[in-house]
Image 1 (cartoon, rainbow, N blue to C red):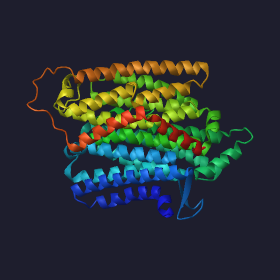
Image 2 (cartoon, rainbow, N blue to C red):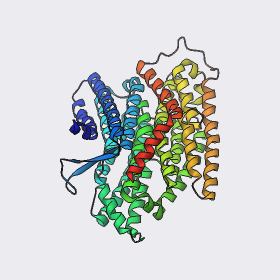
Image 3 (cartoon, rainbow, N blue to C red):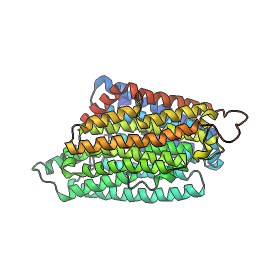
Image 4 (tube, one colour):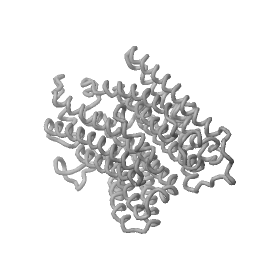
Length: 498
């Protein structure tokens, strides 16, 4: 029985990879059912792992094939990893269910199996980045996630998606190259690839207070590479088209999971490879902090100028990514706790926004322009309510997840120097005002009387779409009202990282 518990992370990753192989030879319906079943199985196993780890506490490492370093690979599972894996798999399932009908319309018949294969491989890559204790394995799955994400963009074969996929690939390959270059420097300096072993060498090298230039360059390159792949401002230029013109499921997955997977890996590198104290001495976090602050404002300003609802939601993601990097850049546990919690909030909220946007666009003649969306909240009530809840969460209305995120960012900010505290509070206030402008404007538009004749009957959403919207709305309220256990799990997990 102990063998089963220790291998749950490996089983989750292997199940996704193996199912992708079998999905390629299945009929379309069977491929869809297999994908849903696999993601559901990962959810169940992740929940079991959380219960098991909560019972005995701590964390454990498991050597693949029982071969020690440098020949073997290693998995590390703790409370934070299990919680992140559960959240990612739940968002994946709800994104898939919420966009099933549009997959049939947007993806060619002969590509459906390939689409589900990419979703399974993407989940495998996310789980591998969450659980692996080997830095090169993380890089391999970073590349797998890059390719699968690009495939999800290009699945809807339109001119704009082809351009968006090309831009996405160019920017992400640049990020991958920088990450690999930094990894190479680090390996040359330490001679190890396992995160724990690298950390021991880094601690030994910096014990006398010195910081070798190679170590600083390595940390800078890896951070910059993952920042580019996460669409941190000003490296976000590929994002609006990639999110705005993909299928609804692709948009939800890309915005909620892909960028967050890279950020989770960055946090692991800060804690488990270099150590937060070394990162602070290098001042790498200060650069991320500044870019995060600028991204919050610039993303919001870009969203205000948009007249296309999906591009508006896409630019909103730039601002929300800025929040996360601002928290990481604070260089303190409190800021990173707020950043990780915001990963959950943004993941649930942004998936709901993209899926509900699709429902609103559907009942508006497939137009994404605000002028054509008037009254769509009445024509598709479920999508209207879900979009409103997601919008209020992003603004920071009490009892929703976004409010708790901003509250914890403000608390973490109080531990910083007075000048930085004032700057962060001003940015949070300005961002809340800007968020209110473009989200409230959109919600009002959805419920304004339509200038065109009302349709003969209301749109009837599919059961999968309705279930996804109800679950995501409930999740946003749960994050806003029962946040303390999640915050404690994050805090405990980060301390075990260190």
